[in-house]
Image 1 (cartoon, rainbow, N blue to C red):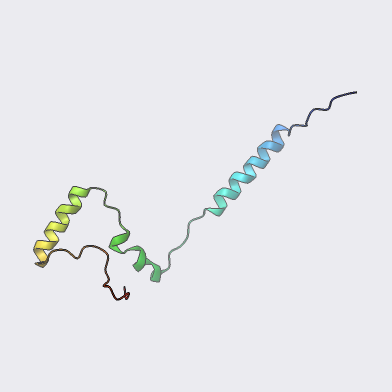
Image 2: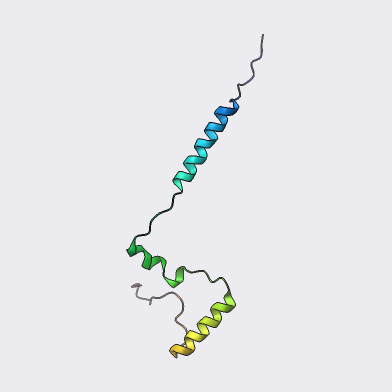
Length: 83
């Protein structure tokens, strides 16, 4: 009786299949063109990261002094649900 070992994929076939998987992954993560009506939503200040908290605090302080008001820098909307 001979024991049969499982067959292994040949190196070129394995390379080709891995290349196909990588190509499919890159193709499915393509860039998307943003429509003009979507840019307003993406440019909302709430969507921006604060990279340097100290610089952001200084900017908020300058804006508060310029506008003569304090606060209101968070998310807009009242309690009525009409954001």
